[in-house]
Image (cartoon, rainbow, N blue to C red):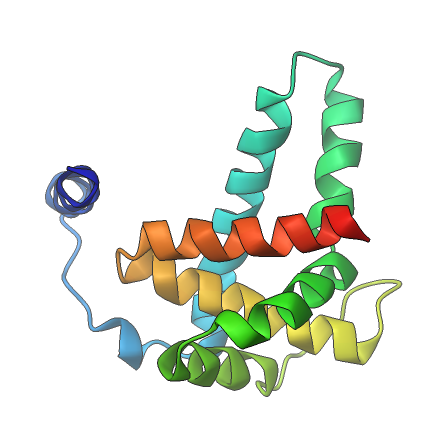
Length: 147
């Protein structure tokens, strides 16, 4: 049933917005990171809001702690051993991409690792592998909580 819901959402979105079907493997790593950044942000915001109604400033503060490059980098360290060879390839392509800017107050290593993480999230999202994407995010978040 889960796959049914995913397929219906994908096909409905493609239908109403007249989106063409594209092979996700043709996207650049930075395009994958672009969408992955938004998807990860939405997931984390959903988790934070689910924790209870609070001032937006507090919601934003809690979200920012998790979506920053250093946290994503730390999550990626924990995920390495859980990745399939294909996922590892997507991560490495994203990590090794030449970006024009770097994040404020973040190391280059953290920023590059976070870009790889976001590329992986974007790839899984666009591939419709949402369960796998959420499982990996859960592993990463659990790792952050343990620290």
